Image (cartoon, rainbow, N blue to C red; front, side, top):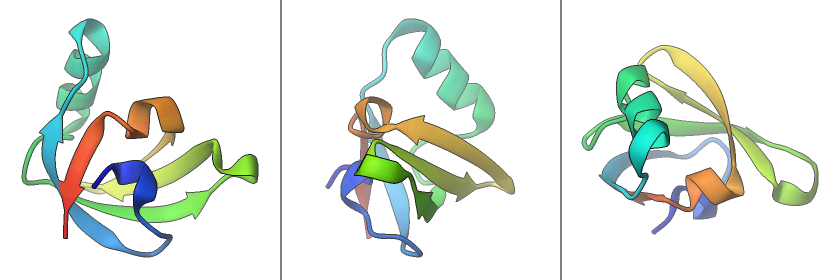
Length: 73
């Protein structure tokens, strides 16, 4: 399942990341690695943006980015 598909207030575990180059480095430096628990806090208007919490930080990602994160329950 993609991170985009997770409903608000649900927590999942990162399984795989399909980012490339600098975006991958950015996600890894933030601590978004396989095995990390991620909670969906809020989804924006038109469901194009969402706020996630993991490892004590909050980050907003577009759906195009969230689609590249595969998670499991």
